[in-house]
Image (cartoon, rainbow, N blue to C red):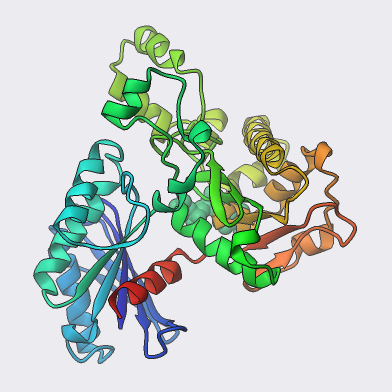
Length: 396
Ligand code: ADP
């Protein structure tokens, strides 16, 4: 069996896959350990039943031990060695270009990238160290959100700053959500029956964190996030692109240091910042239709920025766009966010089928009409399955 782990500083999302059929792993259990170091709670779903525990979780190691003990107690595994490999989601892998077995060199690179992803990488590091202790025989694999974007063109990844910043300090666009983009590229190759290396897509991964990627010939060609996941489109609580001078200006105005302002850009901006009320798209669209001016302002800006990037990426692909894809929490579910973004793209001659846009669906659906010049789809992403497949491929 394969365990997939997505760990933050106080939470561990985990999924267990049965890999008897290596080419078709099946997820059998989906869970969350949360409030680690605060108090602690573990929950998971298995065979349609929900299991919930309130338990003191002083650190990640205790959380992982607790989870494994429960799996044994419930006869889901007979012992820890039933899990032969663990795949970790790691947000920042520096310039590592593919999923990798975690050896000392890979582990050091993940540690080095903490300065580039201080909010994200420490959780993964703590989880890797904990699993190494609790499951010493398991093979460990890291899958990086940055890896898929290592194919960005130089003119896309460079910033117009002194070149020595790139050469000596690694200042470049890295891009994120790559595990999701890789999954979507593979899924779209199946859906459109077109080889992946011939696919040209614009993929909008709109979740709490959000980014858009231009995929050319199956590879990431440009993407909205940058050195860190703060750049690009507007998000739930992150600002996306702003004039960099705002930072110094607001430091002075509010008498705060740079890290405080950066924290506001990460946690109190975006939908939350502009509405002053909520970062959750369900609240925003709900409020919009009740005529709430704060939510209207936030949604108008959110959909305009996304449309602006789509048109930029359409220009990179020219007349060869195989599809525009919406994915992640907002992209998969928010009918009106999709509609408003598409309505702001008059140059692309897209025809939305409103009935299809509103219909419930399984893995994917078309939301454009057959007459639309460009196909538009909503596709459910599955980062855990992607991590599981890479883990199987690297360890079999
Ligand atoms: P994360 O980046 O944390 O993985 P998700 O991909 O789960 O985030 O996306 C969370 C976002 O998806 C939230 O803004 C939430 O409001 C939105 N969302 C989830 N379900 C719906 C829905 N049915 N309609 C509109 N928005 C939704």
